[in-house]
Image 1 (cartoon, rainbow, N blue to C red):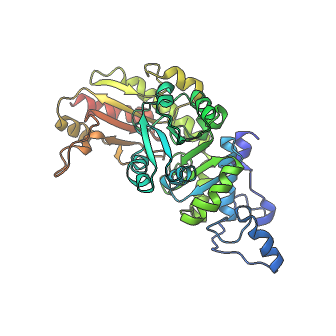
Image 2: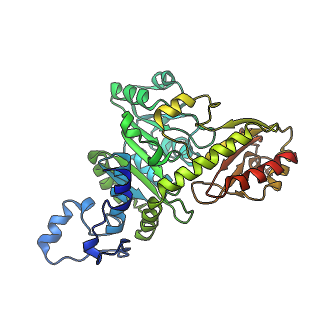
Image 3: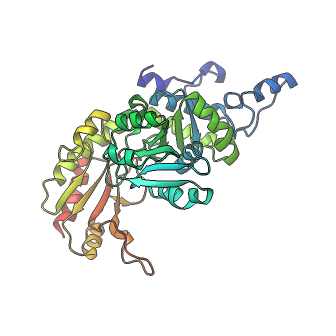
Length: 386
């Protein structure tokens, strides 16, 4: 099934809801049955029947089917947030005494899961520079059960060679999981390279409108069924039907948004790379990016998230640059319609806290759907002022 069929038709049985072109939101906590035998039958496969919305729901199921198909997966589960999906995927594949090999600079709350939460249950993690697969191989221990990747990550955009990591993991009987939020299913499908589990913060590109939280885990039927019976149903961090409907709506325009944001970003990156106050631009689809060839091999595009190092000597200069920006909102997250900036300088000069190890010269930008010339003019006036 091609991309257009998936986002517009898959999972939508319009004859069931009066031929409405938009599927209704089934905002019901539970579902009734006509007989004991019907309920007995459905209890044997709660993941694929409607009993209680914490398990399955018609609106949520449409989203599950669409995202699984976009990733080329057999099945998917959707969660109430990205970190809920990440936690479920990891917890489903480790037990007390196990070891994880993870990329050295994962998303902050993923890092906290590895560093603070899992050690309470006897699970240890080794963080490695996974740009070189040899570093991953050297970190593997007899009790390693999971290799966790982010390619690219969401600050400095290091990539991992997915095919090489998958081959290595299979040689050792280790499960591989990747946070694919940066690329979205439109620009990268890690299962094609042999990765076992694909995770998304659906809050980002899948939703695309900055008005709902969500997470997705995609994988084989066996992996998803095991997760459903344990981490999904027991922990209960599920997505509501209302948020699922917002995600379905977001998927309708995923291709349009991804193409628009990449086109705008490439134009803005080209401008920034020529400005004397910009020391370095970090964007996987820029020819100046260190892993550009690997990015082109694994991805068909790179979306709208990138970082820049500015030529600054003092934190106060970073503050002044940010203060001059008029068209970029300062906010965490990304993937919506609006352009954003996240200055690393925000983690400096906080009373009672040590300064961040991330250089204050680093700014992360997300380019939304606005006119790129409008954004370039704003960046130029702010850069020219420092």
